[in-house]
Length: 407
Ligand SMILES: Nc1nc2c(ncn2[C@@H]2O[C@H](COP(=O)(O)OP(=O)(O)OP(=O)(O)O)[C@@H](O)[C@H]2O)c(=O)[nH]1
Image 1 (cartoon, rainbow, N blue to C red):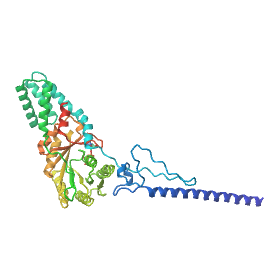
Image 2 (image 1 turned 120 degrees about the horizontal axis):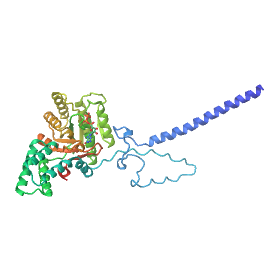
Image 3 (image 1 turned 180 degrees about the vertical axis):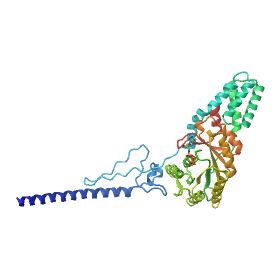
Image 4 (image 1 turned 45 degrees about the vertical axis):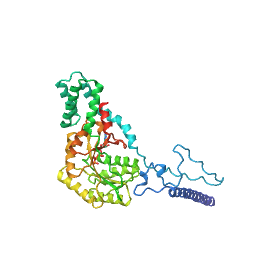
């Protein structure tokens, strides 16, 4: 009996050893296959984590696997292998960056959005002006409508005076005629001849440098991210500088925007790091990488004007050790009315603002702020934000803007 037990014990031990050996063999095979795939995976772009490059377009791909001939083309059939050859391992899909929408495409798409929020002003004005007899009370209502759109007192007076003269001389209040006058007068107020181009091409042997300033919450960081997309769509090599070191998440936010379109963000990992040092490093990287343009996001605490001037002044001075600043864009929230104009005044005393970005124009019927802020600062509105989507920032087009009001 004892002999049978001993045999049974040996059999059990044998089975256990055999099962262990089989399991080890399977793991060995899996491990090899995994390493093969890793080696074949494409390297991440410098400075960008691989997981962020999720949709790199075929043209930018450094992948060793040839891209299909057309986006819709089926993948080539695998080469014939002998009956004993193991199936070829399938590489994971190549990571990609997004291809942002071109500036031209945006204007077409966003025109309707501008009209939705601003046409109420135009319709109100046209209803008043084409009433037939225009008495003093009606002209006052016209004035009130314009003031409510944030056009400002001075521009409102000019516009009403011009319209009154035309109605008097022509003697008509025909709607189509009045619409034409309103369009011409509004367009003149928006100053269509202002130069609205953005400095975004290399200057000699250095990149263009754009400094973006504005109060927190106006959409500044978002605007820097969106602007990078506008410029990438124009085939510019862009570098971002996260010099808003005041708000902890701002650098992460910017880095995410950049990574989506394959743009490197220069940042500090320390909260509250010196913004001027980050700005300096970003410009240095732009020069070394031979980028076309460096865009620098800044913090805009307005607790006290002296502090703001000190901080922006230092950022400016430190950048200027390596390069001139070609563009200073002030970001203003269009919904804040007079408050926005006050911010514009303070910032323009601290830095030489060369262009305005008006955000959140999609959510307000206060489009008159365009005229008011251009008059106050004497610099053009260059870009307008018309939504929260990544490509909802468009170059400001005076004609499209006025047409959206008087349509
Ligand atoms: N509707 C609309 N929302 C916008 C627009 N631009 C920005 N926003 C939103 O405004 C909010 C604030 O944007 P941020 O970019 O974080 O603001 P910020 O000024 O950079 O703030 P800090 O990073 O704290 O300096 C976000 O929810 C944006 O999506 C726009 O044109 N239209």
